[in-house]
Amino acid sequence: MTVAAAPTIGPWRLNPVAEWHWRDWGGDSVVIEVRSGQTLQFDPLSAAVMACIEAGASDLAAVGTMLADDLGADAAADAAFAESLCTVLERLFRLGWIEPLPEPA
Amino acid sequence: MTENERNMASDDHGAAAGEVAGTKAADSVARRRALLRGMTSGAAAAAAGLPLQALATGGRKHCFHKDAPSKKCKASVSGMHSVISSAMVNDWPESPGKHCTYYKSSWYWPKDGYNNAYCSGKYGQKFTRSAKYKDVFGCVSGGWGSNEEKSIGEIMVKQLAPHCHWVTACLNATKYGTQFSYSPHEVTVLHNDTGKCLDALYFFKNYQENYYS
Amino acid sequence: MDRAAAGAGLTVGSLSPERLRWALATQGVAVRTGPVGFRVLSDVPAVAAALGLLYADHPRLGSADFCDFELHVRRVGGLRRWLRPQVQAVYDGTPVFEPLPLGHAFPLLEWALNHCVTSHAFEHLTLHAAVVERGGRAAILPAPPGSGKSTLCAALVHRGWRLLSDELALVALADGRLAPLARPVSLKNRSIEIIRRYAPEAVFSAETHDTAKGTVAHMSVPREHVRRMDETAQPAWVVFPRWVADAPPQLAPRAKADAMMELGRNSFNYGTLGRSGFDALADLVTACDCFDFSYGQLDDAIAVFDRLAQAPPP
Image (cartoon, rainbow over all chains, first blue to last red; front, side, top):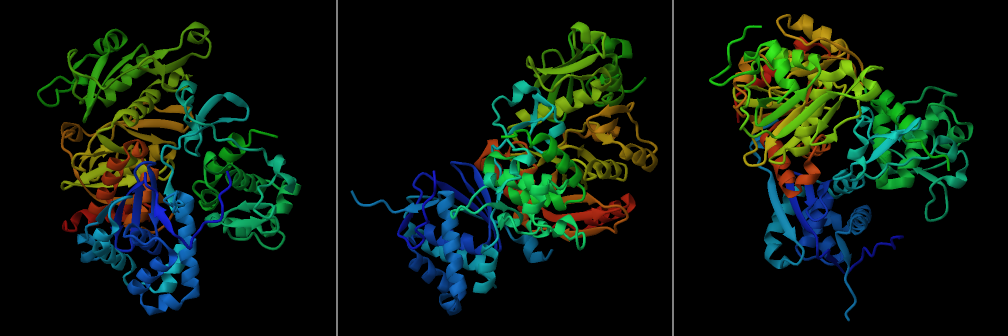
């Protein structure tokens, strides 16, 4: 099965059957997705992006706004930073942790 | 290690999809601030560019020596001598691998979305056939004219050993993904580990190049 | 060999060599090592000799006591009984490994025991690591084969550190403490002579040559460590050792997330345990100072570990 280009703009939702538990040590994080047993080490930004999504952010703009508050106004204007957000979101889609919001019936 | 680090308890956060996100907003802000403390957007972006480290949970696989196909063993550098009873590995999927001669032609290399042949290497990056061996493996060069300075395409066409076996390991890791015993990045790590590289080379050459077609 | 019983119960050493051989060949001998009890049956005299030497101080279990495993180490029948004789380890009716030459019988027993413990110790998170303890605090030394872990462990054991295990760290899921196994230390190739010279008082089994790991010998556990096999220890340090010829000792802090992932890669049952394994591993690295350690001389390594032990607990 080929994976279509990740819809990193949104809107998306968390995988409804997944469950995550995190451990943070300062900026370092390790997370387990309990259903699959996947255990990954996350960099600070990727962990922060997941934290935004777990707090309700369902599109790129919302994630960007939250992180701009956290990192300061420079982040909002930083094109490389925006590209990194897309990379992180693509990764989360590939992991199956977020998925496009289903079309209304 | 500083006193603060020693006393810092890890923070435990759990989340199930479907929980009301708004009620966790304050926790989320505090957590994100702690994660990103002291970081610039540039540093955060750079860290996010590296591949994720994952544990291969439940990933036991078996393989066999090319000369003894009935004697299965654990598919790992340390496990190739495990000589586990064949009965015990019957439930374990095989970690397959093509022989190095299979990849002489670019026809059989993994292809990207544009049908270009590539091989994944250090940090899981994709490299074309023209990439130098030293760049794929992140290793030092043996000097002008050495195999490390040659392209991985040339190494495979000419079957320049032992480098062709290392490239084959990366190609098999690229082709077979999680089916293979190691990821491409892990292959490069083994390559550069002076304590493990000889055993690893033996393992890849003799246990992971079993299929010619 | 005349040895006093360790503790109130009977020990393996309280059996005469003849009685031990007979018991192994008939109803088996049940031995306890820390939280694990196992029964061994074997018709191989070398197994009896090695057990009598290396497990002499270990308590014996009674016929009514529960054993976690029953392991048969027996000569392979048929032509193999005479032509290049072989031995096989069988657990619960299933061969644990492929048959090996008869001369490899005792190492085979030890490897089979490791396999059984790692396959069935679900009340513990099991790690491929050596564990030593001093002053109630334990150092975990995770490392793949060939890193010098067992050599370092054997040296530490003879310089004031208590042996919990040279191969398997058992982290209790209930409280995160480390359970001793107090089983013989497996050494190979050059390490055997290195430790013979470093610790002339150490007791060794006969050497077994031409195994998959080269020449192998087992070093007995000091009697006092066997006596204390029920004393668990609080983990305090995770040290990833690497022997590098002639290298000066270098102890470098390792990030906890990094250490957790590396420990996970060295775990036998992390994947099976799921969330509880994750929590156990995360709690472990939280409780410990984590380091990468490279060294070239054993005395240098001992000095570094002694300094760790002398530092006050947090």
